Image 1 (cartoon, rainbow, N blue to C red):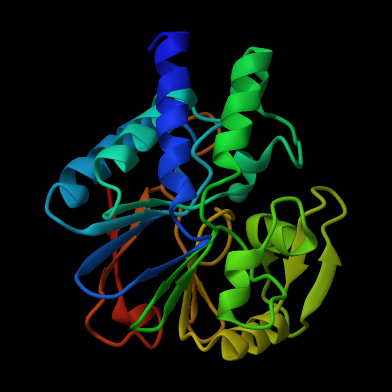
Image 2 (image 1 turned 180 degrees about the vertical axis):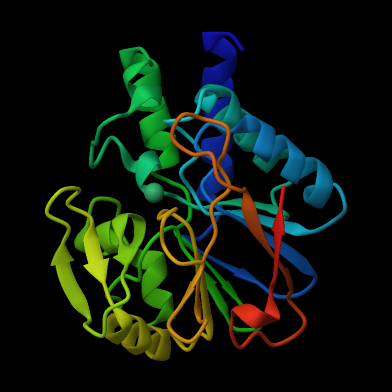
Length: 263
Ligand SMILES: [Mn+2]
């Protein structure tokens, strides 16, 4: 794509996200949740061909750029497809989409853009939604659970805030504690079972589906916290690409009620 075509795509995508709440609610049909793709455009293409074309709702949990080799292709494909399928494709914000409010390294995608495009991608990607709630018991976010008073509070989180940091940067640990402080090396906020149980009960949800932490156990906390990750074939990530497939018309109590597939 030329620079001009990218600017036009970003303008169009921005208009689309302006009509969408930060909290997306899904009710019926089949749904597929996709973890971090991080420039793995082959994973994105496979998933769109296999699941979006067959009428499923497809939810990507953020982190589309950096680390993989095809970040620009990956984010542009996702934005194009969002414009074409606004009611079936949903793109949540990960911490890598928030580079302009909280920078990090390495950030190959962001550092490779010229100033004008960095500003425009930054503005548009900060308008992405933050959470998906389903009527059958699922909450989906990028990382951790933010300290909001209720589910509706998800829709009022501002990029760069403490709650945004908990949601996009948060890790889960096998610990009974609640708030475990920041990781001394990465600065990422760390949470344990106490925080998970308290927040899930406050939000009225059974299963959390999230990504962000490729080395986390796939299921934690009585199988109510499911971590998927969908990037491979880069020097950073070589594991399986996992996704979660769900029937939104049947109640989900824990991870046993969703199907894990690899792509
Ligand atoms: Mn992440």
